[in-house]
Amino acid sequence: MRGVLGGVVLLCCLPALAQEGASAPAPSSTPQTVTVTSTRDPVDKSYRKMIRGMERFEREHALAPQATLRFRLLPRLPTVNMRGITLKVVGDHVTLPVPVSDDNGFMLPRNEQALREDAAVIANRKTTSMTWRAQVVTPGLPPNTRRLGDLRLECLVGVEAGLVSNSSPLFGWIANALNSPEQVCGSPDGNFLFFAERPLFSVTLRAGARSEILPFRMLYAGGEQTRDMLPYCDCQVMLDRTYYAPIWDRSWPDDTLVSIETMDEAPAEATP
Amino acid sequence: MKLVSLFVAGLLLAGCAAQTPQPGTVVAADRFTQLIVPGRTTRAELQAAFGDTKSVTFDSGYEARVYAAAAGGGRSEELVVLLDREGIVRKLRRRPAYPTDPQR
Image (cartoon, rainbow over all chains, first blue to last red; front, side, top):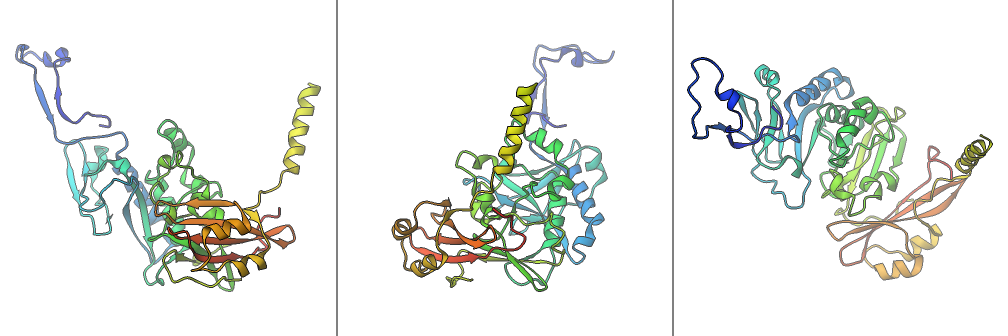
């Protein structure tokens, strides 16, 4: 299914197919046309993989027992218009509309036919113009606060669902083949990026009496991204919202609170 | 074969000698927090007093800069400033060294 060209496909180069069967009409000098109802692209998100991500969420729900899962679309290119996005699941013979909320969140319906047909999840924007993420949120947390177990589950689901695209187009498939959810989410070198809702200045972990501010190297994609590198990072236009969380470090329990101080909060005094 | 062994030994020694780089230019923490006043200090003043360091500039025009201060035990404290698009220090924060930090 993948890689089918969109629009109208001319079949004049396939005479063998046109002559198949005794009752087939004689070849005509007029080119035959077939109308393809949707456009598929190799970078489209796989419905099967996203469903596998949802199944992963169910299996690992203990990381975030009160949380719910949905997916979220975020801007990746500076030019992308994030308003009015529509989404659908498209297979060979099935099309399912997917409602998108005002904050570009959505949940996928489970559909056996779409699974069989290896359907794609397609937006009315170029797939690579957006960053796709799983969002796992425990209700009732204070503003600008996340829970570490939620982030752990976001990583596992996001990688399982094939949402992350942080590599160059040439080597991306190799990197993906080598990076299982366990490898990415269980290692300090996994480099799984999280995005705050607004530009951030500081991130603090709190678990019981223990409290630590994340080092600078865990903010802004490590602070190492050059202009040339940014197009290969799905943090491209969200660098100031980007952070790593120590999801691999089990000395921080799942109930650890991750507090985010944003750039636009009132200026704070220096904290010793 | 001897050359290869020497080369490998050299690499190993170099690895042992290598240290984790400082997060930014090393400064005196007290002087830094006395001189840098959010809402008042300019980029030029920051630059004149403490020089270049590791920084990240964002599409918004804001810039985050990080400096380091010795904290004892081979560890260092971080001092982070946020400059707004007018080049005024908007925020300043200190991150102390934690026991779990790698030693330098």
